[in-house]
Image (spheres, rainbow, N blue to C red):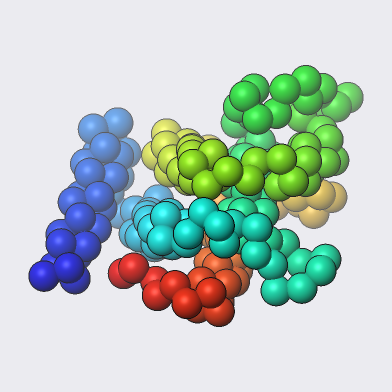
Length: 196
């Protein structure tokens, strides 16, 4: 029954994402649809895992010098916002106040990276961690849904490496997958079974 409910929820979320793209006059096939097909359930799993981890385990880390449970989730959120900013998306002022633009007019990636590191150390409450994680995942999904194929082909800079907006979204997905696996391992070590 639980699997059926999750499967139904997942199907409804995917249908909603595809319907939203169609309502905005965008294609329901191609890069965006394929990306969302993979990204939406992955993000849902990460949020479910963050919810399943007990609050008293959010400070757990496998050893000194390695990110804690909360730090991993906030790192993912910060990474999502940082990478989106490389595509021209405005940073949420709530989390990134006072980030000054560089000479080329875009936000300073080093300042964003520094602020993300600060957030990892200061956003530790389970509810706050879950909120920033959800907001970052929603931002990726919503921003991608607005883009045209031409937007995806626009040039972007990934810390000195020339790429495209599409390439930045692929980096977001790769980064999310890396820490998704890490979060599953953290949960298992702490006796938490992934809820899906």
